Amino acid sequence: MHPSGGGAVCHDGVMAERTIVTVTDDLDGSDGAESVTFSFKETVWSIDLGSRNQQRLLKALEPYITAGTLVSRPPARLPRG
Image 1 (cartoon, rainbow, N blue to C red):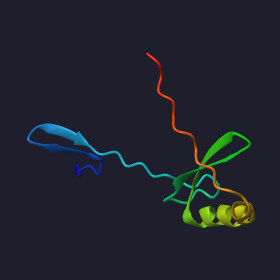
Image 2 (image 1 turned 180 degrees about the vertical axis):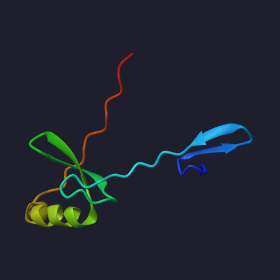
Image 3 (image 1 turned 90 degrees about the vertical axis):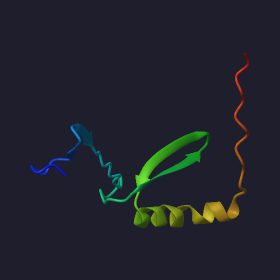
Image 4 (image 1 turned 30 degrees about the horizontal axis):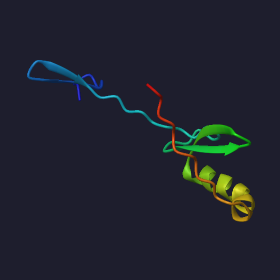
């Protein structure tokens, strides 16, 4: 780390910089979230959730998941060329 406390480091006259990305929960702002996607009626959503909110979402969807049938996505079509 640079003596000033910044993120840049100098090695053999070459400056290097490290960027750290922290994903936060979209509902409660907690760190360590992961992107979760879900769909309903051909609309797909993505939300960043920590483990607590992932469990809350799963619990809310559990009766529907249990009663439903898993449907695989069809393979992506390759463009004609």
